[in-house]
Length: 270
Image (cartoon, rainbow, N blue to C red; front, side, top):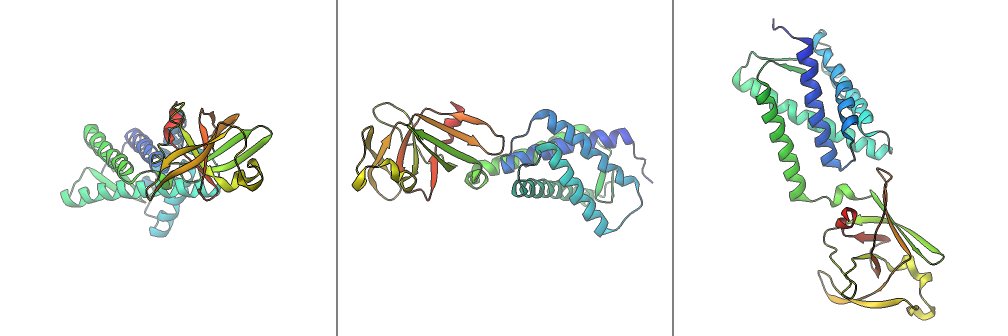
């Protein structure tokens, strides 16, 4: 029987949970503070003690893994909404599954006697350098995949764009899209393209533009044309996950955006 050292087991799982939570935050683009990540990792490491229990069967093992994933995710990211909680838990659970599967494949391939599996947990008695290289490689693979496949799906529903013009306020869903590179040729200000239908009451009778509006040439994938733009009194981009409200210096253009506002994500960095 292999000897399991509790301190090594706890430290190992804190380290693994930390990187798995970072991978989860990267996949779902959820804000994650470092202290909360460490605290959630330490809390999650307590579930690894189930390796010391007698085998409880696949059903209870699966239930325990789901419960532990939900608890760790709630501690790390907090509760924002049922959808976001489910998304983060699923991403964390899948990350666990990929890591455990990779380690079990190595275990089977090498016939290693330095690994021990029980109740969905594993204990590894080998060099910390190997562990660092393995988790770093998996983290890099996830980060590379995110760069290749983009982030539009992950960002969907995460932002609101609030436009104030005189006595009117319009609140729309915001979509971060690197494809929106529209810039005003006169001022150099970026343009947030908003759905025209949300601003119908801004327009004069007959659809004419009131004072302060003008046309700006633009190009889309399918055609060239012009859109009306104006400078509002205030534009805020709200991150609905973190609650951060960022005022931005931008013009508003009126186009066809299905009720949304499309902005260049680089605006959030200025």
